[in-house]
Image 1 (spheres, rainbow, N blue to C red):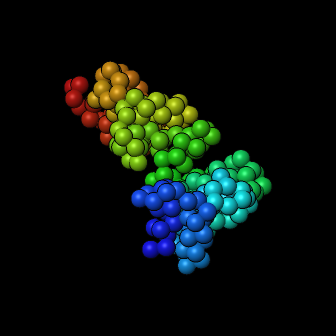
Image 2 (spheres, rainbow, N blue to C red):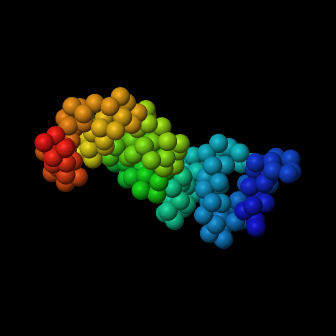
Length: 205
């Protein structure tokens, strides 16, 4: 396909790298509504690869791919809004696009949400490290993000932190701390935490 030829030129796969030729092929494919081509046109404009650097056009092409649910395009749009690149800075719009990308499973978007202090992003990042979604399983990082989110009051993170303490996932087993976090989560109405507390009570008796 035209897009693949452009990609080969861009990455120098099997042929010498040719950014200008790649850019023209991406433009050609993007006009035929190829989503990845639209993303790569944005990438070329952002970094000045094969064409003059133009952040406004980079934003426009990333937006085209983002509107068609390409998570990496959505992440870039979020980044552009967050930093005012090629568009007026808007943290509200950055959050909106990071959320969309996060819901499509984009780990970078979750990092950006987490670093921005967005509660949902912090919890989801912990969940991704816990379950190997979009990244390798890393219990220490999962614990770190659950802890951060739990301290900020997220009931699901509090429950997941309880599980980590109960079963010794990424941390030394500690039934008292497990109980503590289950109670915090249950107080906010999380049913799974209530069930856990009931189960722990039955096991004690």
